[in-house]
Length: 551
Ligand code: GLN
Image 1 (cartoon, protein in one colour):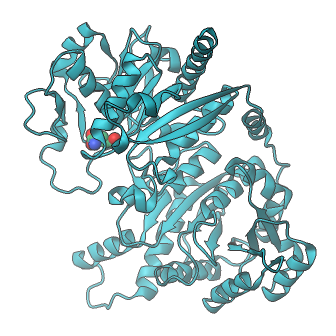
Image 2 (tube, rainbow, N blue to C red):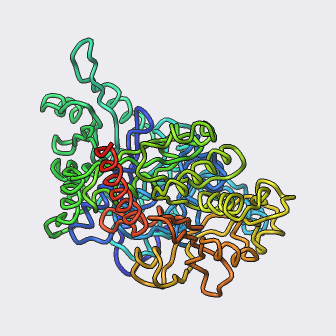
Image 3 (cartoon, rainbow, N blue to C red):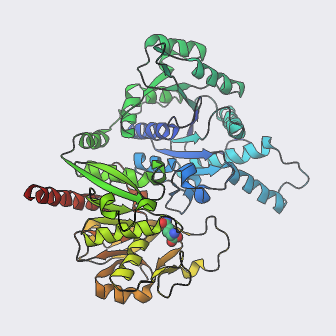
């Protein structure tokens, strides 16, 4: 298969990983993208996941972290969240695909008769389909560089067709249009006081056996890599010394672009790709952000109440949005991770009294729901700033119905289909659907905000667009009752049929949103709802310390 001709020559960088998983390929890809973009190149990022699921929509967050939703409604890997937060521009459906997607496409073609008479094989059919989706993104975005991160570890059976496909891409496009960056681990053995290069050597051998010579090695380590160690790695891995780049652990992921820039990773990649005269990197905004992040004036604690709190990646975008808002407001946000299942009416105060803000997380199903409801009630009655996202908003609505509207059996029909007061109900468009994968209300939808509300105050505009991922919604039959009792629908879909935001007027800051603001917060553009939530928490912290001093 020959490479399709593009208007502008697109170059491809492939990020692979070896030795161990979780070394941070996603952060490496995002950081490299950020540096290259700061040098005037237009970059787009892509993640390949070698598992068989068609997308990450049906994966348990405990196994795979959160599911990140793109503007165009794809349910994708959480690394796309890093890409968007670092580059500040949206990804799309084409930015993530899995082995399952490749086989699904091929089988559909086979059933249609596209291959009549032919045997469909891994090479060339599977590899061709993989290459197609890689080239497609480059052509569609019309960018200078596509950075494709290949999930998993070199040596995994699942990765083989993907590595073979990118080997072929090098063959088709040549050495100066492709670059391979391989991330490995250089462990430090305390007992002998030595950095060990063998795992890196072996990982490169594994890649070589698949026909891929990495152009740059990025070595994750806890100690600085002395020159002799770099020389040893370079010698064993057929590289010049400056192509061995150190990636020492940083405290915060947002330091990685600057650290890699210092190591001249971008120079090495641009030199491989023979990109002539790129401009000097301009990372001023990034540096300002880091400066604010590292020099906070206030300290606040925010509770995240959810059912997957043991695995921080399950709420990664929410966490990062709070980091962005913290830097923006020059405050250090400490997260109190509270398991919803462990909250009950008797201990809610003890669990949440330290928090200056309470965030109830999105989710599905019944587990932990009563605990979330207790957390909402506590925030509402004690007048603690509150942000409820998706299921968190739905809990706020149910709690308000039960305690303020005195409808004790009010519920969401997701939890109790027979409730006499279905204040949260399945959307009409969702009723007939049978398949569970990819069928929710997904992606960006416009929303109109009412003036003189906290939501409007935050966004400073009445036309917004936010991303969704849900099946249930606020039942507008009850809207008037809620309004009269003090919970207002302040954000609606443009046709007025769907309630996207509720807020309580008589409260310092209480907002529930049906959408997911966390998908749109970036380093250089923190999300207005998170900023205002953190600002409200700062005010709450001040009130708390005054009361404490008076007592
Ligand atoms: N389970 C709820 C629904 O489907 C909320 C989903 C979510 O929090 N993302 O509507």
